[in-house]
Image (tube, rainbow, N blue to C red; front, side, top):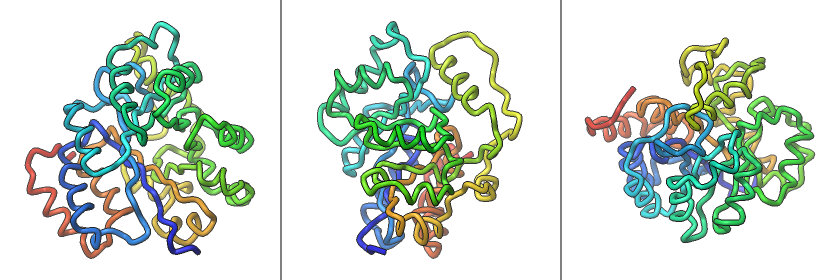
Length: 296
């Protein structure tokens, strides 16, 4: 394996976990010895409250937008808007908040938008050309041929496949180096591998973001997210998997989910993937001293 290749992580909670990241990113900048040598943080993704282009999760971030984006610039990280609403229509494209966010991030290159709607993709591509585009996992692309077609779409810098393709190693190995560079694996999905209502779940979230009256989607497979359950999922990508399998194969982008969780759970996931075990307790003590955190 090329030891220069690092696993680039895309973290949850751009507008959800400001207090957590304010401390965590300062540690990342000042104490890189705490972190695994094979990792780097590339982006943090999320969407603020009131953004109708949002998708993926019902809960949206309520942290101060300006503070969150300023924090990202301070640490030279990519801000990635989760605008993965799949039900966008022409009348939604003029939304002031979403356009404002895109306009601010478009002022310089290096920021992006996660999309599911082709209509929204074309709109952002034309109006905000400095923003890179990410194909959302909410498209639920479980057929490898569909993933291949998405990877070959030059509009996307990254494509997040459905987690059920995580271990399709023979097919993944057949991808070109350019295609492998675009794949961003969802590492810690808790959803049941046999779930057949995943797309309906995401569509329900999209309706709620657009303030369309609808019943809550009730997941038939689980009640709450537990990282321990995710680790037992057959499609879970462990730290060892990343080092021993994915990096040697040429895949280096990994996405951690968790925008709708509490800070304590997200911290545990960040530590698992990014922090050497010997520094876990030290980091917990540093973070938990800030009593303003919504731990659970």
